[in-house]
Amino acid sequence: MNYRHPHQGKSMHSRIVQDLGIDIVSGKLAPGERLPAEAGLCATYGVSRPVLREATRVLVAKGLVISKPRVGSIVRPRVDWHMLDPDVLYWTMSQVPEHDFFRSVLTVRRIIEPAAAALAASLATDDDVRRIETAYRKMESAATPEALLEPDLQFHREIMAATHNDLLAYIGNMMSLALSESIKLTNSHPNAHALSLPRHKAILTAIQSRDPLGARQASLVQLESARADADSLRELTMSAEP
Image (cartoon, rainbow, N blue to C red; front, top):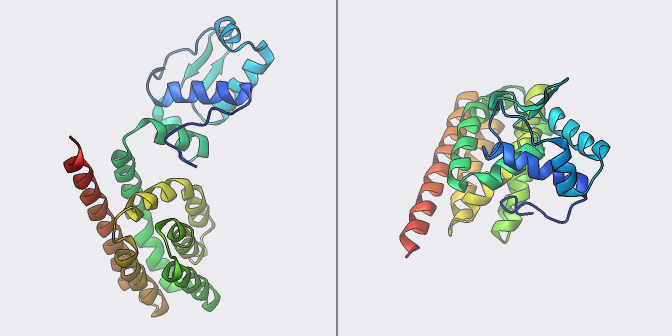
């Protein structure tokens, strides 16, 4: 699925949620603003008030709005949004430049992944290490950038799971969509396979060797290299523009 082009083939309920969600994350509806009047939205979409209110409840559950009696539904500050909610990520990715989104995700990855790799090197069981190695072997055998994506994601998820910290494992799963988009960008590099494998092998080797400092450093190197790859892709794209 291409998350940069929101899907239009939705039910009316889902379309209302998507349209209002995109209006919020894009800034068209700013924090502190009220959602458009119910009567107007019902007329625009041809739905009843119960359908509209159910759509609003979905936005409330995602942290985008708060409903107040006799006031209506108010857009909440960005800090309150559930940014790892798949729909909120979907809408955000459709509204921001790809490279800006990549840099935002990379910042989060630099905070979490090196520490997780170090913890995995200390705490992983033999079965954990085998699962990480299996993911790496699948990366090795991937014939195309598209085929490389899923084992690459699996590699990072298995490291998170090998920390034996439920919160880290949960964060790893919740970040799968954002991580997928990040990896897709770097995998579009002409030499993605050749560049990616040694970096991931270094992380695997450090975990196999029960070397926390080495695992942390290998993870940092991999992420810094991903940043450099993305920057070079951006330069290539800009130089190709008329």
